[in-house]
Image 1 (cartoon, rainbow, N blue to C red):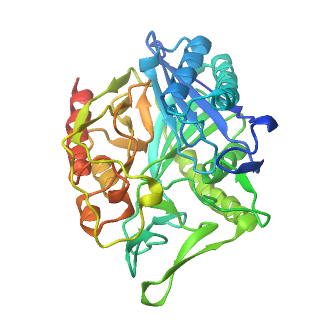
Image 2 (cartoon, rainbow, N blue to C red; image 1 turned 180 degrees about the vertical axis):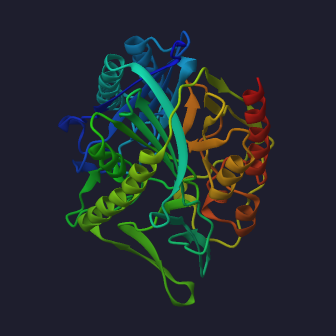
Image 3 (tube, rainbow, N blue to C red; image 1 turned 135 degrees about the vertical axis):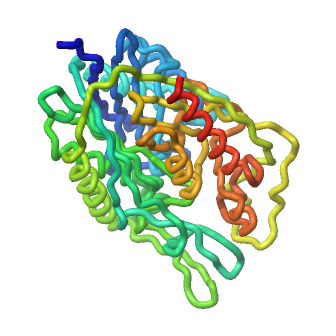
Length: 431
């Protein structure tokens, strides 16, 4: 009998933000449900790899470095073998940005990063303790009712709402890791929506709640169906993809007039419902996946340049018919991440909020039979410079959508990324 190649372990840790952190500068003063850190460890041959996962908004370069150091200390996995995915869960606190100095910022960040690191260390310890021979498989499912396009045409120009006539990718990419006797170890699922049902919603009394939102609810549902299984929601095309229903949303009426409505705490019913619905689709797909051993895993970073344009502050953006979207001659570099599991499965990470058309083309043109594309991702701390904002397709620049205005690159960048990744994936698979 030939020697088995793949070994896998998984774990999760609850991110427990202490009371002394609240209220935050962003207005968080209550916790509805705690976000988590999760990790899947993989060994192929003599090399170890990891898929690290945080149900948070953004932890910046400093926080990423701290988490990667903790992962290495707990697991031995080197930084450039860690596919790092921070989901952009909007209703979770940020750390204070690196440019903000002073004792208050340092104290807050110490508490914030301490809680995140502790959770990731717990996840790593669990994963190390349950590594075992494993198989892996992947397939696609369809969840047609949980996401929608979020571009709407108002009387003043394009803005964010429920654009059901627009393009959205309803596919769910599901990866299953299982023991040799068929018990799930981890299920990774990639859906094309920001985890943002409760984004900007407030309680009736004005409270702002911390929540892992759709990501947390759907992962919890999957985990409830399989004993000792870790489930990981991964954000796909979130640039123009949002949940089909949101607690605070823009409503479009006669003549293109727009106004906002908030369901307040009642919105958490939507979190439970959509989390259950998406989770059920994932469970049904995972049960049908046929898994196998794989001989090789590759962790690779690429590099692609784009012409930059001036960054605009978020509060300066509004629906408009006129906006300067020209470049400024600067260069923004992205270092896309690729975790290739055998010759069939490609997990692609980009540090930009790409949109559905780009995501679908990358999958369609991929040399790998199964490809999942994840935003807010990098290999180790190889993020590139000047990225992290939106990357819409050319027609979004023509329409002057939110994605175009809130971008740090010029029109044509999404198409350039798609062409680059097509070649990149082909080269890696053939190597």
